[in-house]
Amino acid sequence: METMNQHPTAQLSPVLFIPHGAGPLPLLGDTSHQDMVGFLKDLVPTLGKPSAIVVISAHWEETVVTITSGTAPALLYDYRGFPAAAYQIQYPAPGDPVLAKKVHHWLQQGGIAAKLDNQRGFDHGLYVPLKIMFPDATIPCIQLSLLNNLSAAAHIAIGKALMELRQENVLIIGSGFSFHNLRAFFSQTADASDPKNAAFEHWLIDTCTNPELSVQERETRLTHWDLAPFARYCHPREEHLLPLHVCFGLSQTNARLVFEGQVAGKKASAFLW
Figure 1 (cartoon, rainbow, N blue to C red):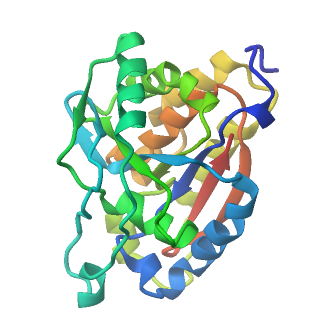
Figure 2: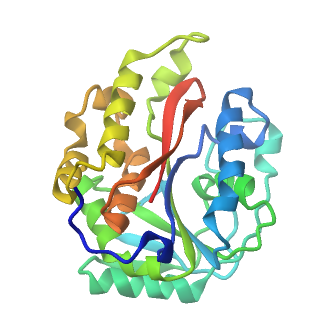
């Protein structure tokens, strides 16, 4: 069982790992994203009313952890080959420079090199899910980068350094995808099952939710995620999985499975701490 002492979960800000889907397709009415869109909409009332949102996006990597600190970040249309509507999406959420400085301080205090960036905009790992969840775009947002070394242990450590963030009235979102093999997405046939995808999902759900695992057992599994069944098939490159590692570092307890369904034709899951 978990051995770490924590405040009661009800007093802590929620931490959520979600699939954000394939580029802008969730916002363009794509039928293969209907389950995901419905899940994100239905989840919002259970999350309280955050005063700010912090997103760890799979689509931003830096040599040191970097935090958006601008007052009004623009949008980055960081995808190509989509209809014109994909490049007209708007999500004018304000930034939160004060919260960004707190995050920067906590990271440095935890021994993790970090920097602020007041020029970078929000990428689609932030605005695609948030436009579904909080369409009014009135809640201030900041975005946190991954490290381009793609170290699982380093991303767990980032989460550990930010545990004080859960004492703030914020919503913390790891925005990625529990399956991210682009070749498999584009080569799949309609309604084709994928046993490799299913096997990895089973392992990931057990790793994140099984209450019988200790903190250390859970951390060891996630650190060595590439030993899981068909890990490198599901994640040839792990940037879409690593936001989950930050989420685990923030919580260090078992999560609740809040979504298990099809996204873009593949099994995907979402977790809430």
